[in-house]
Amino acid sequence: MFCANCGAEHLKGVDLCGNCGNKLTRPGLKDQVFHGAGNAGAITCPHCRNSEDNKNFCVKCGYNLNDVLGYFPPKGGFSDDQYYLELNKNYLKVQKHIQSEFDSTWFEFTFIYEKIENFEIKVCKKTKKLAIPILSAKTSTYPCLKFTYNEDLQWESYPLKLFCDGKNSIKIPVNEKYVSEINNIISSKLNLKNNNPLIK
Image 1 (cartoon, helix red, strand yellow):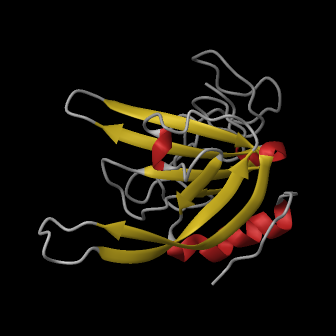
Image 2 (tube, rainbow, N blue to C red):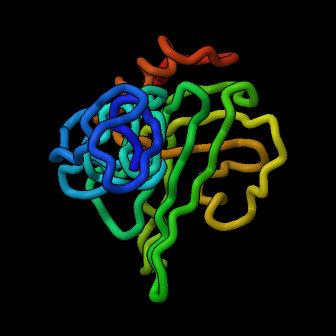
Image 3 (cartoon, helix red, strand yellow):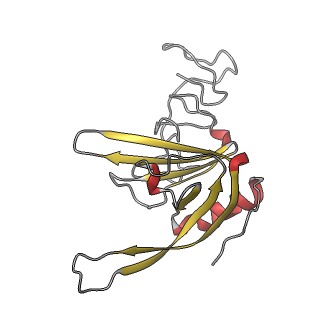
């Protein structure tokens, strides 16, 4: 178990943290930081998906929650096919949940800020072909986080291709209700090259 206050690791059966003296208990859920992402109304650790009390460090894996600037569920409510966006002080991470008939797997894609250019939130379009060919295709718009990544990506491999907009170009749909908060983090807390404000 990891101390929720300082992140120090402890063996089972220890009641107090040997590093900071914090009581090693697992209190109830707190509604802060992660917008209830992961399951109905619960906070989850972006690293291990633990939904018990976190505070500064996850009590299950020791993940430093002080480095998390924002953790967002782009699609909104929970579903079997979900993805999350983590804006960390050190990197941007997208986590994609793939539910199949046989298993459930989380894929993580981490992007280091030093390799990110042309970072912006803009309006993207998606065209969906309808099942009946006589009807025209349906086009919808949504906010998305776009950037160029200066590293060769396996952009045609699944499931990374879900977030790729061509070679070295990443496009991540974002939840409209968090656009303002995401844009604020990008503009005020991250030092990115060619950072563009939200395009409406």
